Image (cartoon, rainbow, N blue to C red; front, side, top):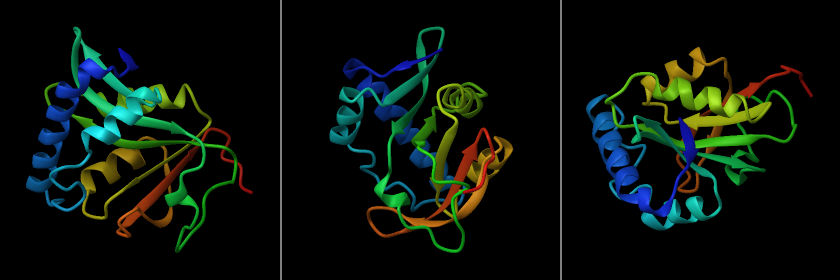
Length: 165
């Protein structure tokens, strides 16, 4: 089950992100999320805006992701490629699992695909596991974007209609 995150979920959410940071570091991706990322302030803001979601099995939170509607400033400029189209889109950010159940990424992506025709997502070049999951989920590699701290990310786009602008 997927539902909007609530303020009382914050401790469980931060536990998932802490486990994900360790997992990423142990699998060749130590730089994508610094030790304090994402901050409580960012997560609280996402919760209040109703753009942070949790994935539950038997009433236990096992995954978390932000699903944000509207233009993402970090996606305004893309290098070495282009977006599939310029249609309005939603963005998936900060998707993470506690590692205790299988299929969290797939369930979260399916939820997003059921709520948007155009979806964008990005990941660090060292996050090979995420890259494979993104490809498997029918996203197309589009180029390189730069996040707020100016580090590069591989950018992907899913278009239900696959139309080109």
